[in-house]
Structure formats: C-alpha cells, structure tokens
Length: 476
Image (cartoon, rainbow, N blue to C red; front, side, top):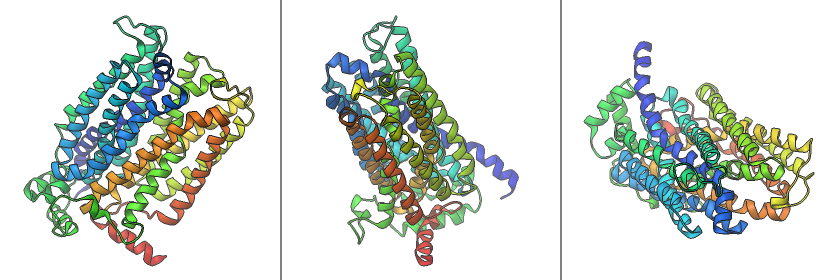
C-alpha cells in the first residue's frame, strides 16, 4: 500500500471512528451534567449527603449492568444496533430526569441512562479498534477519551448558560419555563439523538462480519477503511476466531486462576485503577467542593470549566504520542504525576478547617490545592484517561473482545460508583485530605501495576495480541 493510498484511506476511518466515539461524548456529558444540578436537587428533594451521593452515582450502577451485557449483545446483534439502542435509551433517560418530581424517580431515570452509557462505553472502543489500521489505532482509540472530555466541557457550558438564564441552578426559572436544573438534564437528549443518527450511517465492524460468516462485506469494509492485504486480514481474523462463530458467553472468559483468564484480570485492574485515582470526584463534585473552599457559585462554575478545558487540551498530548512512544511509557509517567499532585492536594487540605459544606481553606493553601487539582487533571488526561480506552479496545483476542471489554468496563463503572458514593460521607467525616490521600496511594499502586503487568501493544495487529502476551511472559 503506497503512502498516498494510506493518506487517502485515513479520512474515512477517522470520520467513522469519530462517529462511534460520540458514545463517549454521552458518557462525558452525563458525567458532568449532574455537577451543575447537585446543590439544586439536594435542596429541592431535601436529600442528605448519603442519599445525594447515591442519586448522583445511581447512573453508574446502570452503567455497570449495561457494560456487562453489552459485549455479548454486540456479538449477537452487531456493534451498530447496540449503539442505536444506547442512543435511544439515553434520550429517554435525559427527558425523564428533567421531568422528575422525587429523588427515587430521578434515580430510576438515571439508572436507565446508565444502561445506555455502559453499553456505549463498551462498543465504542471495541468498534474503533476493529475498524482502525494498526499504525493509527492508538490515536483513533484516544478519540473515545477526547469525546468524553469534550462532553464534560460541553455539559459544563450548558449548565452554566442555563443557570445564568434562570438566575441560579436551584430554583431559578428559565425564560422558556421550568427550573434551570431540569433543563440541564433535558439538554442531554440532543447529543443522544445525534449519536443515534450517526450510528446508522457507519459500517458494521469487519471482525463482527467475519464472525457472522459475512466475509464479502468484511472485505469491502477493510478495503475502504484499512487497506493493505484484505484477503490476508480476513484469513487472520478467521484463524483467531478458530471456528467459534457463535455468540460468545461470559462463561467463555473463565480461566484457570481466580476464575477468569489472566488477560481479563489485567483489563479489570486497568479499569479499576483508572477510577480509584479519584478523577471523577473532580468532575462530579468540583463545583460544590470549590464553593466549600470559598468560591461563589459563578466562580466555582468558572473553575470547573477551566479544569474541563485543561482536560480536553491535554488529551491531544496522548493522541500525538500514543502511536509514537507507546502505551506503557505514557501510563507510567501519568501514574507518577497523579500520585505527586494528589499527594500535594492531600497536604493542602490538612490546612482546612471545618468539614463537609463548612469546609474552608485559606490562601496560600487554596491556591496550591487548585493548582494541584489541575495538574492532576493534566497527568490523568494525557495518560490514564485516553490510553486505558485504547488498551481495552485492542488488548483482548478477537473471539472474546466484546465480552471481555464488557466485564472490564463493568468493573470500571462499579469502581466509579464506589469512589463517587463514598466521597460525600468521607468529606463530611474527615474533610478532603483523607480522600485525596487514598487516591494518591492508588495512583502509586497503578505505577507498580503498569510496570509489572502491562505489555506494549503499539503497532501490533489485533490478531497478534495473544503473541505479545506470550513473548512478554517468556522474556520474564
């Protein structure tokens, strides 16, 4: 394949990968849209901090369930159909959340939205990896994280605009009717509809098509989006499936040690560490936290927005480097940087007074905490944010990719839930120092995990991933 042909083929595959990654935009949008509504729904529904933590994180439980079943469902129905189902559920959930009149009703709608987000979090990285040429697979896989952080940024802007229109997020009435926080939720239906429409325009994964014995279609898609020796690629895919063209069951992930295949455990631990460093505390509770530190509501929104912009910008660092220097070095640098910045945050908050909503942090420690928080976002956004999604999309063998990714993503959502639901009571009991110290410890442990367990997958064909694991064990 000539260099000119390679340049021509990359445009379509980038567009296709970007369309699939819009599922990550929904993930990010929902992650942060709750941020602008936290104080409002707590006041409106008279919730304790414990109940608030559960309502905020209820979507994560739905996401774990959605991720768990999305893999086998995608192997049965196809990647595209699952994307459309996820978009539909999310649009319904966004509207229902905005029309809720009790905490439990809101919880039900958010769990439904979580089902959609969990499914999208599995399908997008799997689909992008299966559609991408190996030379740019890391960059295209990183689009998932770029979409996530762009969704976070967009939702913060929408939250701010709606709150300004209504004179506040809690009881402010927007000019077109209703309280501001309701429109914050309803606004999420727009990207859901766009995602569903775009999903209907992109081709099915060639790996799925070969699994379903539709080789002619797979060849056409590979020729248009990937290029190279198409017949050889189809033969390699068939070999990795090894005749297993029926749907994959979760029991196929069982292994000789601890109940699962070793590669599945690696994916699970990658997912858990990504969440146990506490990144989503910054985005779920940042407005409330910075108000507690002394910012007004407008200032807190502004600081949260600056943090979000930082998150978007540094994702481009990973996109630029992931196919040049590899996945493993980026993760190691990210782990070290996160451990250091989180440790500084923990130290800064030892100087605070009060707990929970009465927490105060005077200068210079308030400024130090703000800088450390943004440095943490920089290190996470340039490493563990995008690279984990790249690895989860590419590291599993063809035969079990969707199912294994579903289990790993489910573990990620459960870990996200545990971190999110535990933060308000920890903040009430200990202030912010202890939670950030815990996250710093997990960041340090993530460095050890990557150094000892993660092989390099840069430039390796999906069909050769198993050999990468074998060779690494033999060298060890």
